[in-house]
Length: 459
View 1 (spheres, rainbow, N blue to C red):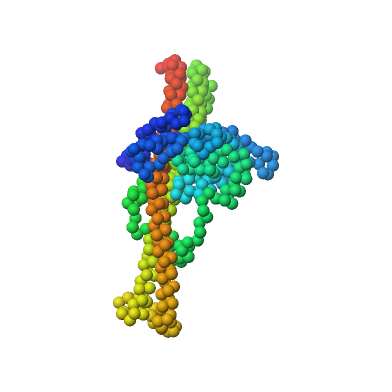
View 2 (cartoon, rainbow, N blue to C red):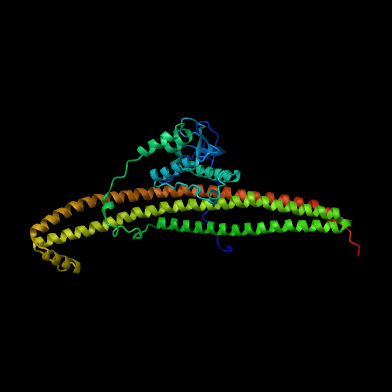
């Protein structure tokens, strides 16, 4: 159970974003993913900026190539937009799950600094049992895919990507996929000096030595948010189990009351009404579980996966800073070695004062016959070349780290917008479902009370 003092969602604000302004005579829409003002004087250089809105939907799942081993399900994807990159304001196309996978994987590759939302896992129990074409599973997948596109549409960068446009508009999607693989939008990453450094230098388990407080706070917020989601998912899973047990208990009680009515001939009618009410209430509990609790659990799990994608971006930013720090240390070591050789050649200093490692290295060089000035000069020449390469690499790594940090700050603002919108939607739907349940339950019990009151018991 959650403690009373644990405010696991204290990072979530419940205030709606400011209404968006009209754009190209379109209706005013508000919320993340719709157009935000790009001329607001209060906006900072790292604030996200939307150029328009993109409203998406996934509908009409259809089984294609039925009765064959290549059968699959296609979905109608539709959008309404005023983004200039789209050639029409209402694009639509049919796509299968593998097309969504391609879209997600390539967006993650093309925009490494963006939080690209995850897709639902394909390898689920429904696939193992061969039930992936059942109406229930197709509807659940349709909801998951709709949420994936909704998250893309809320992102100011991803919503304007050429791949997203082709996903909604292209009538030759397979051709576009092959062209995108052959000619990606960004330049192919070339091997850098970082790739040539041994794994002992750039250890994947190394920690950033000079962490940025801004990103430490972000990571702490992500930890707290995911902890709250995990606890909530665990709590409502238990509630769902107990509600299912209660549903079965009410059904069994209804059967028992109906049997009792056969024995008590004087109140058979009243007991039958009471039994029917118990059955109706049992069915209402089952309906509420399917329409309210189950969607809440699915959304909690999906939101947790989305947060994991956000965590991965923060981790990648740390890796960029770590690359810079490790390259700087490597440059410092190479420079020290070059200065040592220069001091030895000039005769101003030997290995004394430079540590045990330098002394042992001098002795090893002497044994190998590499202790003459000629070999030292040649080694210094090679070190000078390496120092120049490392200086360029350090400068590039520093610029990359700073740029990635700035983009990560923007990305956290985008994710915060999306998180707030989804939390309001998820908890609002859950509250509406609970209100509907209690209203219906009150009506059921209020109808049976006068009937029960007509029972007269002789003492």
